[in-house]
Amino acid sequence: MRCTRAIAASWRCNNTALTMRDVFILGSGQTAVGEHWDLSLRQLARTAVSAALNAALPARPQALFVANMLAGQLSGQRQLGALLADYCGLRGIEAIRVEAAGASGGAALRQAYIAVASGVVDTALVLGVEKLTDKVGSSVAAALGSAADADWEAAHGATQPALAALIMQRYMHEQHLSLQQFAGFSVNAHSNGRTNPNAMFRNNLKAESFASAAMVAEPVNMFDTAPEADGAAALVLGAAHMLAPAAARIRVAASALCTDAFALADRADVLQLRAAQQSVQQAQAQASCGAADIDLFELHDGFTILAALALEAAGYAQPGSGWQLAHAGKIGLQGEIPISTFGGLKARGNPGGATGVYQAVEVEQQLRGAAGANQVQRARRGMLQGLGGNGATAVTHIFECLN
Amino acid sequence: MEVSRNWRLQSQRYRMEGLRCEQCGTVIFPARAHCPQCAGESFASLALRGLGEVYSFTQVHDAPAGFEHDAPFFLALVRLDEGPLVTAQLTDVERETVHIGMPVEMVTRKLREDGERGMLVYGYKFRPLLRQRRPDEAVALPARVRVPATEAVAA
Ligand SMILES: [Zn+2]
Image (cartoon, rainbow over all chains, first blue to last red; front, top):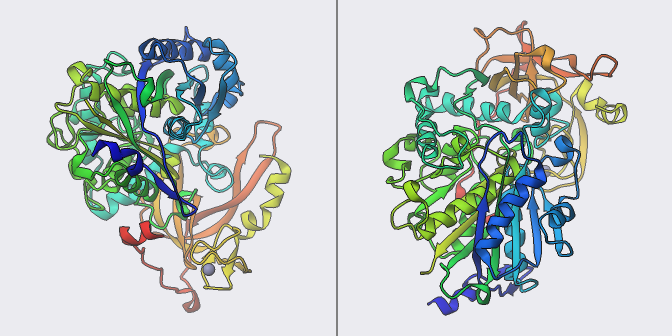
């Protein structure tokens, strides 16, 4: 069956079936997520890239795709492709930055996947890097808010937490829920972050204290939302012949990016992540698998409501009932569909454009059996999903282990 | 916000000028180039009455730059009588009384100020509807329509 995979991975584009090559993960690296006052953007990037390149030896990347949201606004630095290729010892190679707000990491991963799958390059490096903590307070909130519609949302004071709050308030109203009923998502994330050496928060969160945290934008509070952080993660992708003979064979089985109405108010249904749903369906079709065949799901839990809606969009719950999965029996490491297995955005931390690359590194670790205390048993297939601007962009990948 | 940028949007910011699709009748606000329902590109302009009800709301405590002096403030999705959902602040309300389904009307207020010497941006906010609606204003609000997942994919 495996010999037909290249054909199975083909998709239709302008009525022409494109045949794509298999793409494998050759190596990965990451820095701890947190407030790195002692490290600059380029130093963070180099740390993650060095680890990934060492793991991928002897392969060397022919192209670099940098995922980043806010360096232009917060660090006054653009043209990250050339900057970071140069600083990371890769001067000369093709290099560009990819931006899709919170979905930047997944979007850059997809560009690298396309580059290798198409045969344009044999190896590509995906680097997610974000430096958010040099600035604090309202300027960071405004910069993060630039993922929203500047004219029709941000101009009225809308921030990402405020827009998530509008979704959550309506969801709670329709399903007759209290904030406390979302506690399980954050409790699970912290429980998994506790044993992730790279996580920003490595403490347990008591369900009893969840609802009492300070409000960010009611009903979204500090324990509901993911912390902004610095971090960098990197992944080397390559064609099959670039794999070292003894290396784990982790294949990118699917890659799909979809968009929805940009402003929340323009969505056909505020309570449905339509782009997420479509990207999951496309991804599962590419990987020839269904929801039940996925062993873990790194979703975009920037807010607990997004975790609930992402689970609904991916087919693990009916619309309006995703919140019911918020306990360990369902989403824990031994649960039916483990999520946020290294802490997710909530506890590992949310370094903006780097977040999707962290998700990819974490899924790769799970499939290699290298997740330590965070290991999901018998993990063969893992899905990861990034959301930009509360779901205007959704990018979903599926990795599978062929060993 | 730049003067020219605000000026371009003034008819929408100050008068809530929307569009009606000449092909399918869908009312659109804010204006856009393609009808989201039928992809039509010809529209008649339509002054919205600025009446509706709160579809969802939040009280924002962590305000972004330009809104610090207003915090905490109320942000809402307002379902206009004519159909569109609009993101806007609520004003003249108390936390104890604001609720989903609350009838509201549009008022023009200061949206933000860009620093001490920066420009003031005015635009629409919504406040609780104080008066009774006239009979001709009593338009039934459209129920939210869920499109089945299968249709969404086919589209
Ligand atoms: Zn139309």
